[in-house]
Image (cartoon, rainbow, N blue to C red):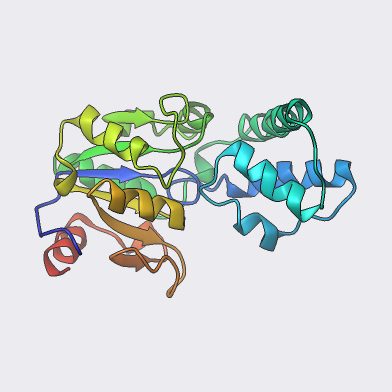
Length: 224
């Protein structure tokens, strides 16, 4: 059952693949780990890690390589991957902001619509600082604030509480199925970022935030 129409008062954004292009750095770090472990990890394999927590991602990677390791070794490998990833993103700048993201955030700000981040990433602040995006957010909920990964709705529920907007007045922008499911479970509207035909649970799908404006957002939410 779709939520009833309500005017949108807050937008909640996933980070990787929605606002900034850091997915490639995750892939580089996971591929480097697979290379070290002696097997091939492809971009197609990497698609399965979208919106998935670090340890769950490692389990998927190890399954690709048909490896079974003890928990201590797995934590060591996850840390190694994360250190490589942090090294990659520490060199990024605002050129990594995806097309349309900045102008849409600016327009939301001008219209008084609250803006929150809802990301599983524990490195979100590094990315936002390097991309000069921090000033646009009224709330930043990342992996350091949550105990449950998407599709659990915790990250979005916390974001809505932080900006003091009821879930039915919130819309989530996500590029992963798990994120769209989390939005639905939080009682929020959802717009997927991806190719046509993907993210089937989202109310709408756009290829990027270049397609978005406040006017289009309110039209979408009124019509669905």
